[in-house]
Length: 415
Image 1 (tube, rainbow, N blue to C red):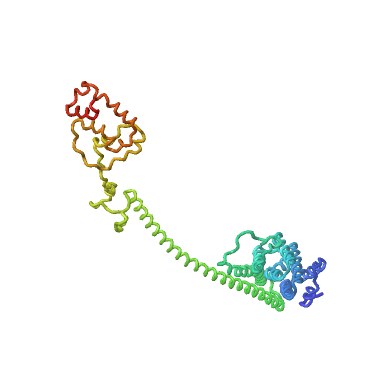
Image 2: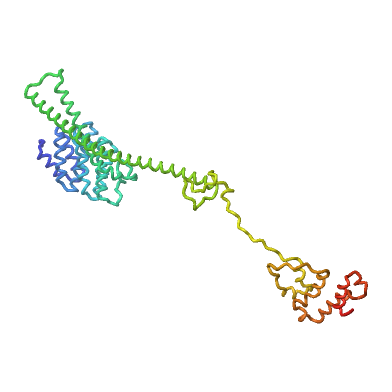
């Protein structure tokens, strides 16, 4: 069957998921490898028109053709599929079921393992697939464990650089197109302008010139698309750089302000600590930088200057010893001690007693304080017995004054 657009469309329409069908159509397409560019265009158009299940078969067909071309070292179809394979794979992946997505990921994984396409193209395919997964916000883990060529467990890109992702994909796609178009155009141009080769006949020469012009136009368009994609990417990068420069200037100003404030607070803290070491602060004094009152001589306060005056304490005057002796009972009876009233805090000073008055007072205290009425006869007899010797005989009164001796005799009942 001759190569025509209708023949290619018919072959692609009859394609099914069996291995025999895919291999048969792949061999027919590779036989007409001179029309690789046209076949690639028709293949992409057919994939756009097909359903999700049919798109998987077309990806299988491209995989078979690309691997056979790589094995035979024929780059015609590799160059034809490289500019469109990322878009076609993303289109087939977008509306596919989970089962179909797993099969597509497996195909892309094989391309990476066997290096069927350039690494830049493989990265573009993986980026598109990951972008589709993120846009759907699917909570299920991809069948093959996230990205095929990156660590899926790493952090996602920040929101500020998310707009760069499609721009970088466009640059990668344009670069892949130029890598296939430029070498071909240069090769055809070098053949046609080689002075060592004879000039062909005018009809053949015109046909070759037409082919060279076509290849040069393709290379020109590919480079033009690459320039546009890179300019958009650079413009977005400049916007991000400008935004970050503005934020940087603001943060530097804030940093200088906080540094100045910190230095001022550290100086203030040092002054306060020095004041604490010198003495206690005067809360009533006006703020003078340190918060402490100054001494009268204008120098820093010392502990002696800041020490408060001691409170006045009134001295307590104890009662005279004569009064304590007069009020102290002579009896050792504990009952008398428990009823003895406390001496007053202050009492008038009594005049000095006469000679022998202390002895008389000690004998008359029980009666004077009211104890005589309530004292038992036995206790009175005991007291009389204690002082009975004072009147026994003249020898006991020999050393006493006459008046005192007379008084003692009267108290002793004339003894």
